[in-house]
Length: 444
Image 1 (cartoon, rainbow, N blue to C red):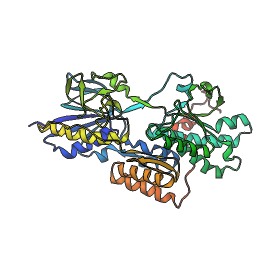
Image 2 (image 1 turned 180 degrees about the horizontal axis):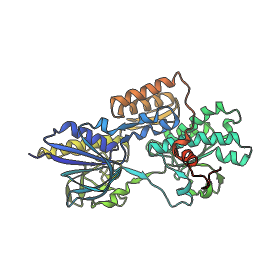
Image 3 (image 1 turned 90 degrees about the vertical axis):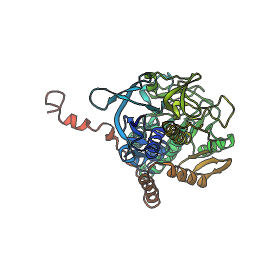
Image 4 (image 1 turned 90 degrees about the horizontal axis):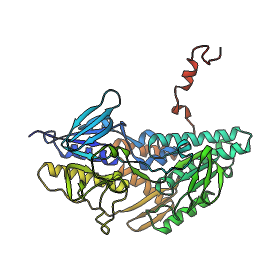
């Protein structure tokens, strides 16, 4: 028989794990797996805070697709349209004209993007925390602000440079805030002009608690630990404006901040707008527990989805509940979906996805953490160790596991790197200025 073509759209947690499992379960005579993603790597997002803080190398928090998916065909490009009636996807490669890729089965896994609100100034001054580029930028920016504060004689400039505002009290926001504060406090040993109390770290959360994935007492413990580090925690407070870097909060407070990090939730990738798949009120692709896309009562044959962009019923809870957009669900859904695709290709019935959320772990900086796993609650060093152990076990490939462990081991003996490499963000600036023709603004 002719091999079926399985097109995987997106190489995040769902796409990478699904493609890897499909390539191992199905022979080349049964299926060809094609993976399309604009990036040549998969980002292991739980390691972004540690990469930003310098605990691990940024390169070690990403997994190269071509090395990991050797039995798959990898296309570097973006899917711009999916016409499932024709079972065809339009792909825009990194360079060159668009191309159409026909398929028999499609895995729709473009993931999510930051969910923003129409807050004045946010577009101009905010930074997200979902990609490795954003993590590297935030690290360089924070260290650069320390240099600015140490060099300026102006107290207002110093206060603004040393005010770091994080919006969103979920896992991404809490871990980013805690790790970056830990890094900045460590860096201050090299800045005799600055004291730890000169820094102001502000967390703005619209609800009355942080870390909604864990029990309230664990969220309260997290707030207490952050307060002990002299952080400014604003619960039940909203960001109303940040025009020109002036932060205005719903509680009436106003202050200048050179750093505004937005971690207040995610939404499905806008790429889904260019498809003919059914969506729910939150713009997620509607799915059955088998991970098949469903339109009302009709199964959309050959179409599958999972992860942040999919509304997958949670069979461990009451009807009407859906799986949370977490890496824990995404990885397990990817495995179940790959097995189901293999079942369908081999003429068998797909199996429902069912997984009770095991719990959550979060780092609050070096040797500090909070964890709630299968009802067992831990704090401090044990929770931090569990956080590292769990995520080390989950990052794909033996190569990356070894490199991460080496980074952590070296950190016990070597001091943390606190160098800002801001030129990475605009590497041609100096050359462009040097090569500018005489008389076109270049000094003679």
